[in-house]
Image 1: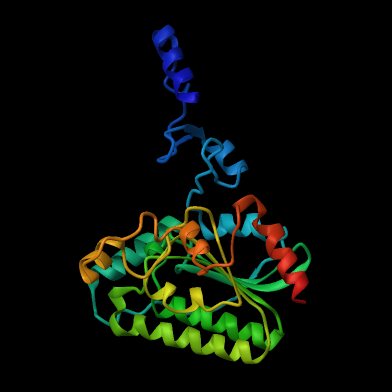
Image 2 (image 1 turned 180 degrees about the horizontal axis):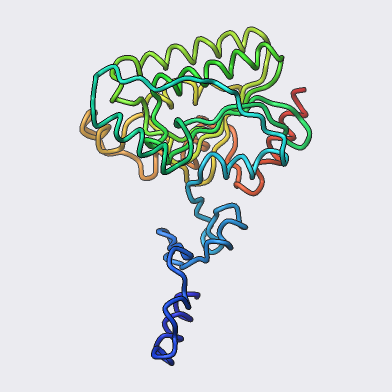
Length: 278
């Protein structure tokens, strides 16, 4: 293992190792198998642990690079600013900090791109921004994307990662559930394809709305998917829950999703689905 080699090297000749021998921030530890992975190797492997296959959470921009043909993605230019309906000072401060840290304006990136030459509207949620929570802007961007798909007569693909509705926006965040599903009903009436891809984690109001009403529902391996967390459900119903009942594998077994797709195969699978339904 890499970690054993590092320990051996440090014990053999610790006095001669320079401070820049092992650059800070260049290594990642897998929290499943404990392997120490060089970041560049991890990124080359689609951000999947080469030892155990754990799918690390990734940003929307990295997902675009993995899924969409090079230089084909054109993001929608929507000048929509996040509101603060509850007048929470800390909310605005956190929004500004996240915008600077992540380089994105909200928790979803939407646009039109090509997947192996096939055009589609693509929305990718980003867990680095408020854990992908759905506020008014996220709901509006997804609704706009659905309407654009209807206008352009294109299929739509939504990659979901979310902790649920954004409680800092109160009832307005919950209204996005009805808003997005109503738009998808119009997409369905137009006879257009909707593919949802559930990634780790997909919870709350997103699961209860647009994430799970797709024509085809895919998921990444070991993704946690549900409405409420296991502890909340157990306390509510007062019963023991099956082990791993919110994993994508359990949900596939019980018919909730259609297929589990490894990240390195995702582009090819999406391309074939778009081709079959063209």
